[in-house]
Amino acid sequence: MEVWLFISALFAEIVGTIAGFGSSTIFLPLALIFLDFKTALVIVAFFHISGNIGRIGFFKKGLDRELLIKFGLPSVGLTVAGALLVSFVSQDLLKGLLGLFLIVYASYALWREDFHIPASTKSAIIGGGLSGFLAGLIGTGGALRGAFLTGFALPKEKYIATAAAVALAVDLTRIPIYLSQGFLETKYYWYLPILFILALTGAFIGRQIVKRFSYKIFRKIVLMAILLAGIKFIFDWLT
Image 1 (cartoon, helix red, strand yellow):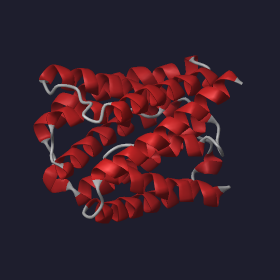
Image 2 (image 1 turned 90 degrees about the vertical axis):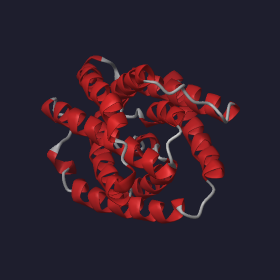
Image 3 (image 1 turned 90 degrees about the horizontal axis):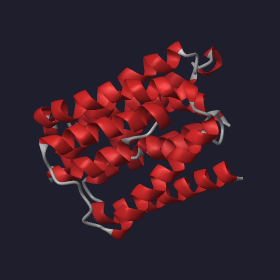
Image 4 (image 1 turned 135 degrees about the vertical axis):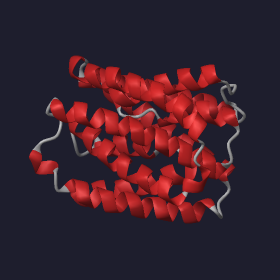
């Protein structure tokens, strides 16, 4: 079981680094094959921290500090609200919400290749708040975060670094809340150092591919994978 979980983590980080979002979106559905929802939330969040540290390190020259503040502060604030609600909502409902979110976003983004939210301080605050809330509640807000950030027409390096910095702040906010509610049993602690190494490795590999691969084609592949994951969650929720 652990081997496939770790392979899934490495794959998710490579894909997430190239696309600028999606490592948790891809890894969470895969982790749920092996783990219950609450355990998977914490494992994926720890993994996400490691990957984002790697992305920030590899793309640090591109960080947009002004956008980081406008987007990051509301993200952190509403992450707390989302994380606190996890214990009061059934896991089946959470999976259904996750599936619905993934399907709506991926379908629209595939249909409208130029889809983006108009850039403004207001959109940064709204996008940051909504994506942070989703990250806290269902473990993934990167796709929504990406939808808002693409509206700012950032160069790829700046987009990846800024998105990673916001995601890192969100993860550092939600993990203590998850742990305080007993979401992670001690028997899973040995996963964390391995996931840390895999996340850094995946971020490095992704960085090399970013230089060579067509972003447009790969984005479609990622969106299709997200769409299929969403369909699976809805199916599991209804059956």
